[in-house]
Image 1 (cartoon, rainbow, N blue to C red):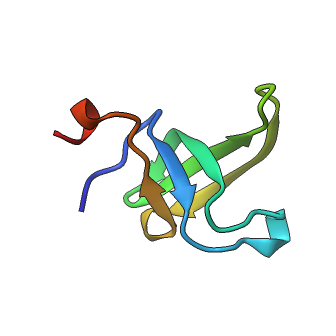
Image 2: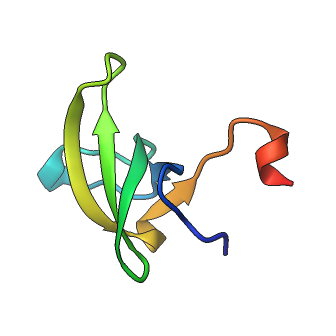
Length: 71
């Protein structure tokens, strides 16, 4: 499995209804908190944060914007 790091863009793999977040929503890792646990920030199209929470790596998938990032 690919290791996650600060500023990786990630998508949720599951709903988190208590925070009104749904599977597929996109966020950014802003800080590693513990092994396999990251603080992820979710922002709107204007850059306003609407949720920040600690998530496990198994709740997230790293997103890639171009092929150079995958290689």
